[in-house]
Image 1: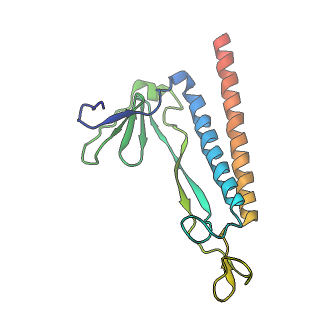
Image 2: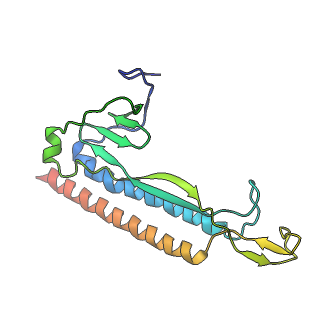
Image 3: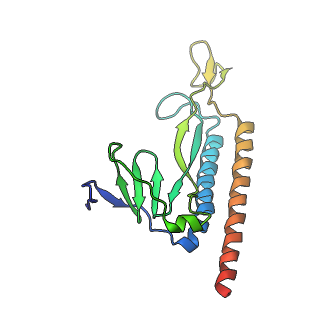
Length: 188
């Protein structure tokens, strides 16, 4: 395993995005995040009637939390938790190591230099309780005849699905527009 100049382990995360194509990476990150949101929503809908899981109890609704990804024009992508991606290599930087932020000349000329897109911070479980339904014939009914159902409301999930789909479409439109502009710039 390679070590950086401070002696911390480094692992390859992703290739460095060239400045010309950086504007494509912003809507691409949105496409990826919205796709994951759609996948989680689909899982929630599929398990809306699941009263018994491997962990025990009813299925718990899952929610995707997104966060902005800050971009540093020197080629570093700064993420939470002290992780710095420099030239496609991730380094864990302890909080006690001072960092000096010096903007590069490219940052002053590039309007997208401060933009990094979006990323999925985490997928969390909704801790609210689902409804209790009286169904004494159900195999998961308690001694009173009530069954605890998942905290998934199909109407809310469908609204969230439509919202995620619209955001996905908006990111796809931006991606196509940027691609078209880059293609025209190359023709010049």
